[in-house]
Amino acid sequence: MAHVAPTGSAGILPAATWPRTFRQSGRAPHRGCPDGDPACLRSQLILGLQLLRTTLLSACCFVLLAPVLCAQSQSPIPTPSPKQDEQEVDPDDVISVNTTEILLPVTVRDAGGALVSNLTRKDFRIFEDGSEQSLSDLSLRNVPVDVALIVDASSSVAGNLEDFRKAAEGFASHLATDDRISLIQFDDRVVMLQDWTGSLVQLRRALRRIVPGMFTRFHDAVLLGARDQRPRTNARHAIIVLTDGIDSGRGISFDAALRGALQAQTTIYVVSNTQIERARKEEELSILLSGSDSAVRFNQLRIDDLRLSLEALSESERHLEQLTAATGGRLYKPVSFNDLERTYAEVADELRHQYTLYYSPLNSKRDGQFRRVRVETTNAQHRVAARIGYYAPKK
Image (cartoon, rainbow, N blue to C red):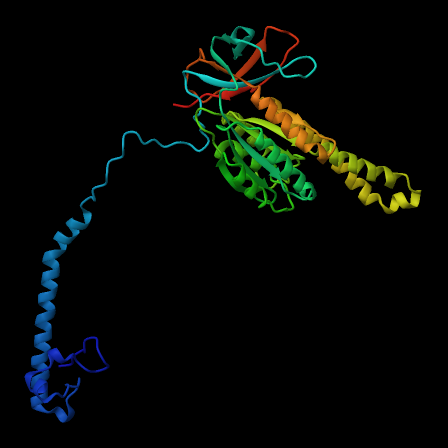
């Protein structure tokens, strides 16, 4: 009878299965018996029967226990029931407006551009989708503001970052003790340098961490400042950006950035260096075009590049005008980086003299639709800056 050795060293059976005579002698049985030795053959036969019996018993146990094991594996594993107050929220849903009251920051200037700060509730009229609403309250500068400072650290601004640092510190010094400020840098990436803080010391440290880059992810920075850098529930939300507004096209679109700002009810102020850049490029272009015909032909590639850059600056200004007007902010276009401190001081002054209107909308539907808002004063000479609307919450 031939026997197949169980798993072990080649041709050697495990010691526990050796016949007693072999266990006593300490010699392992080999698969074959030399010269047909009858004692060896008999031992091998006994060994084979023992192994066969062990195998059959193991198989029977498996067959008997298999249904039980299968049933256990198929029995459902209890899972904790979800909490009743947990809901799945779409990342695009910005539920920052309730159906009982709307907070709307409003800036009023006279015909000469000076801020008007002596108005009362009866001087305002507010309309939502054409229907006049009833103002429930009005306050002037008793609502704190959370301001996200965003700086363009791309190549077009990198040479004047020290001017921005000084202007940013000057701006922060005008804020009230209950206001907060944060700092975001953008170039090839969008980087949060300082989360919300009321400390001027922390802001100074963060300003020193600004590092120049190359490209401009302006739209991504606006969306981060509006949607992800959320303010307190009882505070106004403002963004101040230093940029030329020319996005490198490596991130989201302008429309997506504008939508995010409106969803987050953020007022955006832009300090644009487009006028500074335009003056520099126009001067270079004028010098190149004043040369001889051969020099103009030689510099044609640079001339074409400057013309395209000027067109890009004009398009950028149109976008920046649209962005600031839609959110109730303002576009500043200083003619020199030496004017940055004065410009940032103007923004701080506007925030201090900003009205905050409250009203309960007549349309209480939670449908996620955009509601267009218009604010007027009883004086036709006033120029009113306010957000053009808001997105209602979804169910």
